[in-house]
Each structure stands twice: as C-alpha cells, then as structure tokens.
Image (cartoon, rainbow, N blue to C red; front, top):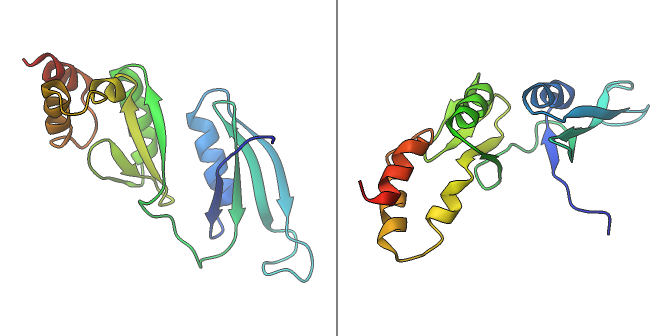
Length: 157
C-alpha cells in the first residue's frame, strides 16, 4: 500500500484553495493539476484536480461541483508546538472563515480545522484524572486555544 491521503471535494475552488493552503504551511507545494476533457461535467480545460502537499503530506483537491459541502464530521488537525504557532495557523486559516469552539475553525472554503497544541492530548490522556478534567473544563471556555491557560489548568493553578 502506498499510503492514505485526504481527497477534498470543492465546487470550483480546488486550485484557489490548494494555493491558499500551500501559502500557509511550510514544506508545501502544488505538484500537479489535471483538467476536464471534452464531454465531461465541467467545461473542457477547467481544473479537475490539484495534487499538492502540506508540510510534505499529499492531498488532492477536486472541482466536483456543488453537490457536496464540507461539514464538521471531518476536520484537519494542526499540531502546534507553542502559542506562536497556534496564533499563526489560527489567524491564517480563520481569515474569511469563522471561529467555532475548542480550537476549531471553519476556513473560507468551509473546511474544518483544529488548531491544537501538541501538549493537549498528553494533558487529557489520563482519563478520569483531575488534571484531565481541569484541562477539558478550561478548553470548553475557549474559542482559540490558550496554551498558558491550559498548562495552568493542568497544574491546578
């Protein structure tokens, strides 16, 4: 098996979205673009798919039409090392989109993202612990993650 990668369905913004995402993440680039041929659902020559990488990981964007929309059932998680990274990715991806809650946002194309500090999953991994409960309670008050507040809750301060 060669691997597993996300395949994202857009109405007609696949190339625009791929270029937007590539501009945000390091080690990212457009790899290939395919086009609709004659006798296909969209005009011949218009973009069909865009193959791209985000931080070295492969993605494909498809201009499939308006039948399907993104929803909260699927999101992409960005694991951030510190508050500066949280702020950077949050600010870039929420631009033209909308904040949600608990580190989630919807970007300008309707794709959901979670901007999460890498420490978060360790903080909540001991289910039933007071530390995990405090961190989850703190998270529930947040729109964008505040790493210092999560660490303070973890320590019980």
